[in-house]
Length: 346
Image (cartoon, rainbow, N blue to C red):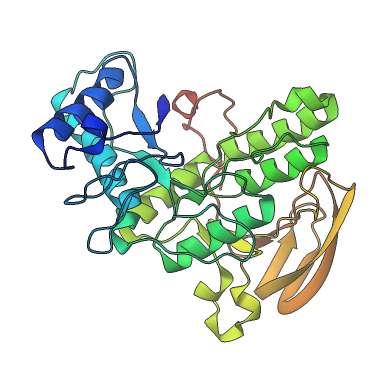
């Protein structure tokens, strides 16, 4: 499966209305040309100095353009790209050079501005129909966690994620390990934005990241099941704890921790200076009601309670709920399609 990043410009330098014949032909020809060559789906970026406006709005030549009925180019562009992919798949059931046609997908930005810590923003409600969403450029690890957790609560967006590794080259590999751990126990795992090759930081960092990637692949049966549930109900893969325990807010409403696949409590750690990661990190964690087993030590903590936890850089704080269920595979493969699921572990 392959996708390209597209920064679209309107037909005829923006003089054609979005629903005009010229614009429809221009967009369709541009998108399907590359799908004919093997592209699976598109990334509708719209992060540069131009974009496509919504219907009935003439483009001014720069920026996102005006809104129409509260709908801006994020929603309209997502619709255009998503439906173009869906129609192409329908018209080309025997497409070549790529995987068989499946459900359409378009990668699009989750809101207008790039995410930063503490920022709250919501898009037009129609935008939730067009996953997958990323959080923009120059997003640090703290902001990535916040946007991923909150979007699953407020916007019915179960696949919000950031460029894993950030839009910077980490000064130390420990920072990249923390990013990788968060992305593995998150929604979408997609390294992007800078030179994030694990081996470029040495064998220790490469080994730590490899272990996390192995964890991700072992969770594929559970991740795909959660994805099906998200498709049917909108319920997120990453859950803010107050969805289960609203009576314990505000502690349970923290967007700095979350439940992954309903049964694993995850509390990522990050640093005040992006790119530099200390050997150990300490943070406070709210433990939900019940018994939770530390994934690293095996110790059991009973909630609800607040605790302070310290872990070395290579260990993201994790606890598994007693009585919870994960379905995993031990099959090693470079692609999910190549995994052997004839034997699974509960």
